[in-house]
Image (cartoon, rainbow over all chains, first blue to last red):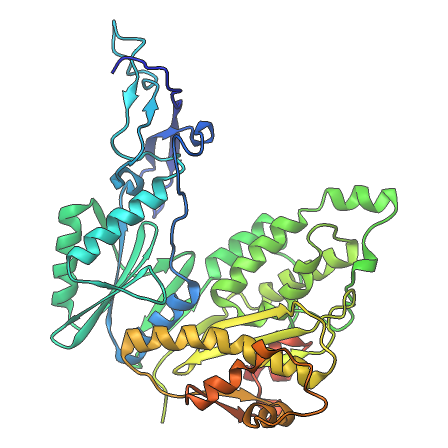
Length: 326
Length: 141
């Protein structure tokens, strides 16, 4: 399409090497075209960008129902998820590097579908999926818009969506297979055994119908990243000798220098994620250390490290879901 | 649910903590500083109940939608004074300054949406949200 007066969006290729799941598996090489979304102008190139994801409490409520009713659980993943969304705005993009048509160098591409990197991609994908689910007789939950329910002969089938990951549960395997068939006829799907969602590992014990949720690998990775994997473990998330307050904020140049090199906020971020997903026991400690994000002191940093040491000792801590004994 | 009065050393705000369980497993938890400064522990507790109520309404709705169970929910709490305050519509000298918004707990109880029950302090799992907990107690929670 010939170039108009409208500003175009630039794009670039991203190349990635992805290790195989087992050491024997050869690594995969991926190339992905991304649009430079930061050059989009609000009001012209995009309007709304808000996109929904499922709440963590909903996921846990879902698991508790799965465990207590002993439902079949399956996980699916949508390949190249954002390419499914349809665009409402007119967006023009420069020609792709390496794929420029000879003789038409000045031409630009008009985008029909959303691309990775565009601001509205997540929203457009969610919209498209929502339409699809409603078309197939699913009801969107009033309390969490990423939870879908359908009753077939009185027994419910649930679907939870987290961007491109979805969890499906139902009493009968037949219904799940049917739903999976529908979904893969519309989108490009990858079938995963329900083992891991949002860095939480799911383990099921078939005999006692128990379901466990843990973040072992995530915590191990985080400990390694901040060089705390050899730290001595402690047994409580926070100890009474930490009396944290705003008055402790660094005031000497030396302290300010020291704290500027400490990755305090990213540590709190990582810990916070562990707390939100599967560690209710960290809540108090986290509420303490996260109050001083803007100007942490050495004392605050020591408290954050203490939480790490606690996690070191409770890496295999998991949430248990099961039937209530009456 | 549980709380810590004036836990914030800087602004003397209080800390609220709660855990909700569905079946036997914890599904929703939180520990936050309250946005306003409270005058007494009972007041903090009362505010905490209303904070927990908000989450409860949502969770109850979700559960009702997912598995069709819509029953009265028990809110366990270790403070007698607050439990009496939630049951009693009377106007007290010491509680008259509590903002109307916190009285919506009464409405909830009248609608049989929730019941506030007593739990022994030693068995309260939400303790871990608001204080330094000794190791022995941590194991139970």
